[in-house]
Image (cartoon, rainbow, N blue to C red; front, side, top):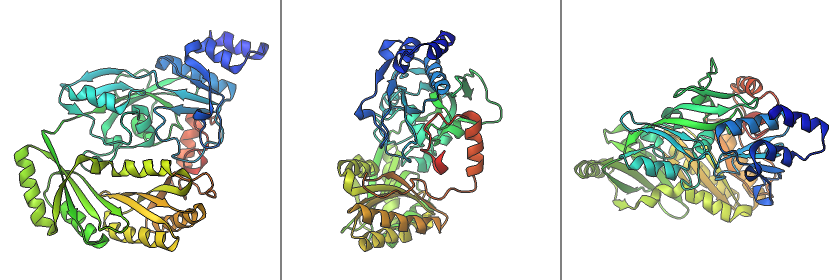
Length: 431
């Protein structure tokens, strides 16, 4: 069928939409609408293959037609990264939503890329297990989407990032190959550690169709204790004291809200007796007032992005990376820069050296503040990555100055996606 479709492409005037319908079936193809637009790019079609073989065929077809393909899972992070240079076809994994195999005795799970994180966690919980991540919008975010953006959340402190938790993937390459590494092999790609390579690659190398993860037990109990710090320097002192102690905490963050002292949140997951002991040790260690907080405090990062999307034309969100010992200095820098540019700043910092910052105000002032913060971070072995910007804000690359690894990244891109079919221009260095 594929060869006959290629022949039809060159000998008839049939539309691209009809060609995809012939390949996938009429229920799998529709014209894209304005709701499917990515930044300022309006795709022509949205295709939803029923399985990974169909997905690979659709990707190959688009590649042969010279169409730019935008992989899409739950569409929870459409504004992350740079706008695509082109966007003709949205390739949705929505119908690839099955949990393929949960080997609970080995604490592993194989799952299709379109399965939502909430659905996966619910199924794992029936056996007292979980994928130890805390992602944005778990009811909508898909396995493929969180891997592509490397969104693992606050539990990364104890359990590692997604690169530490994923042990196998299958991806569809633009030439139609289904390539696997780890887990059950369809075809190996010699020389590449695919799970680590595609995690955080923003779908620029291949489309993830399934993944295998290692799991962890669900905790017996969980408790969040918030420490009321005096200022940013005091918050850093508390964070470093907790990190240097023998406390068995699962997450550690600092919330900064304009006009209020920072709060350091510590998550304990253990038995009730263990939590009581850990809490007592924490209180004696930090030497400040503590309160027990509700679980929603761990949604602070997500709340910043929700606010930004509600106030889309007057806000920007950026992710800053820094050394944990720089937390106080980074917090002061954010506050000073916001005040100098007449902006409101709200941010949450993780103990492992990442901060999500919401800036609100005039778009021209946002540009100035973001440029200042990026220069400061890049001058101190850090980075600033844009996750949301107003349409009216003058251009600022989402990723900043590429590092020494860019030539290698471009070489891998040219080998796996030589026609630049997948997400062209969205990733670092215009990849």
